[in-house]
Length: 547
Ligand code: ADP
Image (cartoon, rainbow, N blue to C red; front, side, top):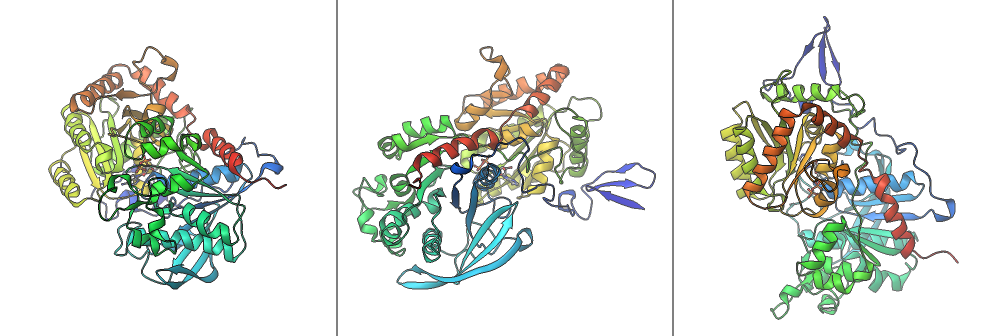
């Protein structure tokens, strides 16, 4: 007889059978008691905000973890929402009802309303569903046209710009029809950057008076380029916004036709604009074509570091881990490492502690330092370490490059390149890793290094954006109390290799200190409890108080 216990098989004799690459069902695709360890109530010890200060926040977003997550945006919406709820605030999330969303992960899903919302001189019949995801009340907007159909969150065969403009208006339309006026409408990225324009130039004149708008920019790479006639389809005249002070994309000035930028419009029209780390705030004020707009609106532009949801990311309770652990009892981490090594067919290191396992879990896009990731694969292999890359490449050329790398490495015993998205495997990899690599060219905040730390993986990062705000080099003598990882500055392979050399010799030659470092990174507080308060303060500074 074989018992299945947290996906680790224990035979009748009490010995364990390990997963193997030959298993019919890969170990990360087994059945898990998914998310049932994550409760609606946040971590204990969080104080509730005073009753008179409690507000209603509505997020309007293109992503939400875990049901519609592509990258950090999804994590941030879920983590921030849950943290605000823990403090006693009322939070709702509006999300497109993507066809790819797994309905099974939504509790209490039901149709709330059927209504019409405007698009391109017509009124589109739209359904609004309500449901609960990780304790958060979510409203799913489903237009009865081809928007949001397809196998993934992004990349469907509809016009994404128009679909998100429709979505932005459909959320406001519903709030107006139902007479709901939240204190704060919190929009994210270019996808919902059109909402502040619709709010102030249309719905505010109709009946929505009370709400104030906060925009968070998670990544300045995408500006939401939009032709004027595309914008006009949402019901506002696009040509009115084609000015430097409003939403024209400055790079297109003098071209025919000039274009709009939904992100720029969002910056101009929101009551407050946040980006996701203090260093990225400084970087964005100094470079990029939006710097001028951000400088003009400097008095309402803030840098608030993201946090992680320490209940979702908790190695002591994580349902996906074969063995649990925490900073006080780290033995389980070693078991997770051996489990992953066995499951992926990597050489288990035994008790030698000489084979550091590096993981890199990322979207494979230029921002993430693709040349540095490929270099790390070769260098880690050369040094006799192990490395697992878990990533997806939206660009076909990059995908082919990494497939070729996978082809040449995946039969060996040190490197695995896994080109897929798996929430489950990502949890197991963070738990198994000795080192989490984040070699980004630029990184607004970065969650991987924070999640890695929570799971006892020491971060090795490039000094940029939020990575510079969260990781401090062990060899930096100026602030030893902050030291928690390995940092390099250059964008070249040599700089990365030096950092890998330092990390590997630390791991191999200073075992005791390494254990101390693992404990230290696990004890660091990168949770939302630390930073959500800054958002609440910001919400309070812009909201309209009842007389
Ligand atoms: P970004 O938002 O730029 O993608 P972040 O570091 O802020 O980068 O957040 C990335 C999030 O997405 C993390 O939670 C990371 O674990 C997750 N992630 C990225 N790629 C994958 C993948 N292939 N499979 C599972 N999770 C992934």
